[in-house]
Image 1 (spheres, rainbow, N blue to C red):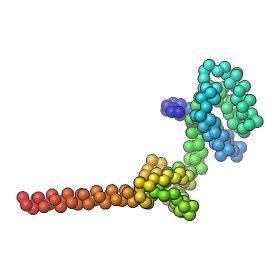
Image 2 (image 1 turned 120 degrees about the horizontal axis):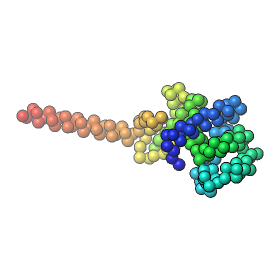
Image 3 (image 1 turned 60 degrees about the horizontal axis):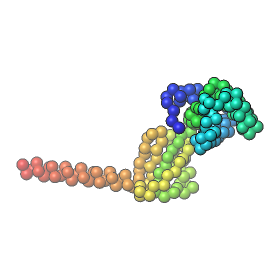
Image 4 (image 1 turned 90 degrees about the vertical axis):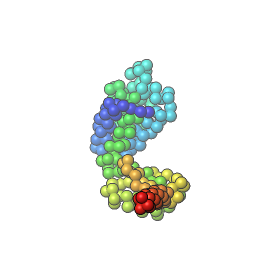
Length: 196
């Protein structure tokens, strides 16, 4: 599901309010898990998604359905928040609210996503060392997502906040090839200039 900038701006307002309430109740991570579960459910189940977003569903019926589904099965904070969001006519933004909530929570907690690509799976020891080094370098807690890509031959490629750090064997070979090609080209040019 994609959202435009104005929808994301509205979602971030709700996310910040939810995060503030969750912090007061010491339920930041629990609420994040609940929001992520609901967002995933809405992605998988078009019928439930329609309940949350269709203008054809009566507001009172929607409120009653939310109450039946979530009251007693989820945290009071989530059940109450869903009712408020429903009354404001913003339930269709729930996936964006969940995404904004997670991003804001991570920012406040100093957590950053790091995608680590290696040729073979990382051992537990290497994963822990890499995580510790990234934490030291970034001054944030990395949340590692591992990708195995045999094509990099060896080494590691790390992507954090849109920045890529590539120390893979394949990239080193590409750089070596480019340097050798440049050197050969320069030698040929010098040889022709000397003959002229």
